Image (tube, rainbow, N blue to C red; front, side, top):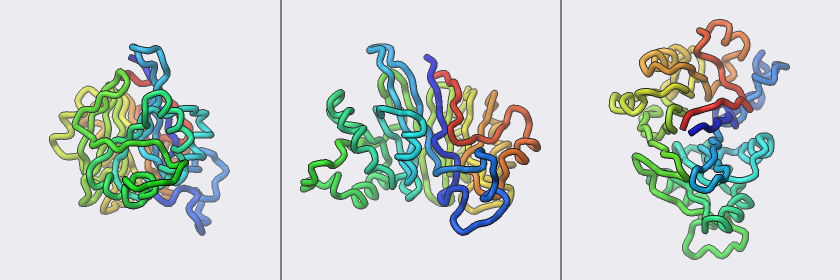
Amino acid sequence: MEGTLTFLGTGTSMGVPTLGCACAVCTSADPHDTRLRPSIALRWIEPATGSERVAIVDTGPDFRQQILRAGIKRVDAVFYTHRHADHILGLDDLRPLSYEAERREGFLPLYAGPDTTEVLERVFDYTFSPNATYPNRARVKLIRIAERNPVFGIEVVRVPLLHGDLEIAGFRFGRAAYLTDVSTIPEDSFRLLEGVEVLVVSALRHVPHPSHATVEQAMKWARRIGAKETWLTHIAHDLSHAETNLALPSDIRMGYDGLTLPVTL
């Protein structure tokens, strides 16, 4: 089955431009150097119904802006990588999309691990509390993410990763994989990535960071996984899009906001 993967945001937790910064990337006129917080949208046609389906990975603070820019009119499922603010704080913007999902399916499913679920329930207690009375709250349901998650005709595989000392989730969809905020890929996870052809992986900068991969580390992983094409994401203002691409091999490129790739699901 064929689908598309759209980069809704390719920046770090602070975004690019970064507030208060006047560096060359933050003041760049190249639109590829403007990066919202990290998120992707996966789109495909469900074989059983012929309906378009849309899954989102992470709803960060820029979610509303990203969805408007991408022209997305519906969301059928959301997957969360981890509990940090730049990945969850746009959940409330799911409200109008969740009303449509409620009419179609009864609720909008949100797939998350137990630690992320705990934070979401606390931050958005007016949505998830059993005593919630806010009439316009999002019609969503938290679902404990499994190793393999069937969603409207495709399977989303959870790929365990480390973000510093925090275990987070990457995701594989058919021949594509999305690994953001990663500093270490455990050995068992490499087995889950065998046969991936389109790899999206975070590469913060060239200088080492305790909880994020460098460009060089991301390139090594891409070579080990054997992906035909690799796209970098979660990129800091240390890296210029154009200059960095010039130094990369042809099969490894800088991702950018709005980029859409064909993927086999």
